[in-house]
Structure formats: C-alpha cells, structure tokens
Length: 127
Image (tube, rainbow, N blue to C red; front, side, top):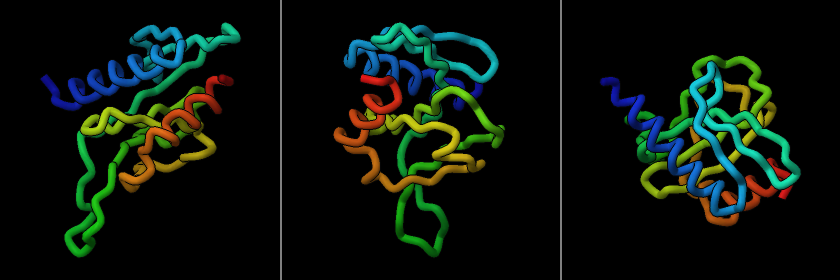
C-alpha cells in the first residue's frame, strides 16, 4: 500500500484529536477533496483537507534550513480549510486557500507552536 496514504491517515487522526480537544466535533469522510468535517460551536460544518508531513527536510543540498513540505497538488481554490499537520511534533495549523494558493508549501518548523496552533483553530472555527 502507498506510504502516503498511511501518512495522510496519521495526520487526519492527529488533527481530529486536537480539534476534539477544543470541543469541536469531527467526522472522517472520504469525499473528493475533503478528509474531515468539523462542526464548530455555532453548529457550522467546516470542510477540511488535511495535509501531513512526517518531519522537516532539507529544501536543497546548498541550504542548511530544514522545512516542512506540504503538497497542495491540485493548486486550485478550495473553499474549505487546509489543516497542515507536522506529524513528528503532533502539531497543526489551519489555513484558508487565500493564505496559501501554491502547489508546494514550505514552512519553517518554528511556525508550528502551541500558540499558533490554538490561534489558527480559534480564528478559523470561530471560537
């Protein structure tokens, strides 16, 4: 079986666990483009596409900086939320398409803080 499927599923379960910790109800779905549906306190259902990566990697041989790489292969607008999961540290950040709009997103590890995780969840799920 494709290893990427397992990585993706791991990320989905990490995200669901974190969301549930914020009192958000989650459902795994297998619908084109959506991985999770998340019900916020105002009873709105948010469509979520989870993107996961195992660990930061070196971007290129000449650079010393390691970054988390997320493949946004469709590179077209998605009207739900992107949930970016760093599996090695079990952290996530939530973004909209307007905040991303690239094919490959490269993020420094210092973006994945507890504070940014909470802020992005609160902002995007109206908490």
